[in-house]
Length: 351
Ligand code: ATP
Ligand code: MG
Ligand code: FE
Image: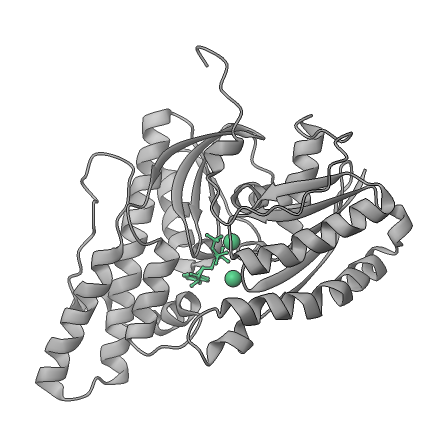
């Protein structure tokens, strides 16, 4: 079955074609990063308007790339949530209108399920069960994944997401937008050992996180340095960036490995934008090897938001028999707030 997938939950417009048997055929992406940079964050109204401008040209592009026409499409998938309501509505409207006009099934996809399954877009493909560290701009969760649609939340952040901690600290240090990659680049020139930053909840005994205090700790260091030196030098900024990155990576790595130990599932999958972080990748590779486990990362282009993961998640759900393809209701409903546990099928007793 040939599925077209649309992603428009935040500031990336993504379109992709996935075949339930052959996998990913083509995908195209437009990032609005340059448009939002002047504002230091995503402006929802601008995001929605830009999705409208991009979505049809991107659709033409993937069809051309895959050498298919609209007539070949057999189902339409779209991100139904969570995300910005106005932005989600663009993808949902285009998908539902197209499905309705052609009498095709429309498949609403949970954005985090897209992120969660994205490591399966590459070879080698992780097998079930695996432990997933989902680290994006809005979420930080550790999940046990036993199959498509079988997700158990083991731990999550109590306040800011890891990506948010990167973004807010980068903003505080004036490192540019988006913060994660900017802070990480700056950190390469710095010495993390110069500043002792807190590792929130490192020894809390559970698999939860808290990152909101980190920004305040960095701010305190900034104030102290300013008092001593007047303005901060590039080296000061680099050292602070390195210390911040290390503190975040320490906590993320330690909790994910703890989840691996606790469950005995020695396969770890990292998904979401922060999964692009080099230090996190290196650290997890080294430590999981020591435990004789395996770690899987999505290719960099599939770490942050993209259409491929949405079309792919829909294909996985179709293959797992979780989609009612005969359902011909075409509701223009999006769910800006939507927990992944709400789409999890109950585990069989004793499993
Ligand atoms: P969500 O999926 O939770 O709704 P989102 O879609 O905005 O959030 P993603 O696109 O998955 O999140 O990831 C974006 C986040 O990843 C941003 O916070 C960004 O700073 C962070 N990020 C991207 N690259 C890196 C990197 N190299 N190091 C650290 N963080 C990074
Ligand atoms: Mg984004
Ligand atoms: Fe995302």
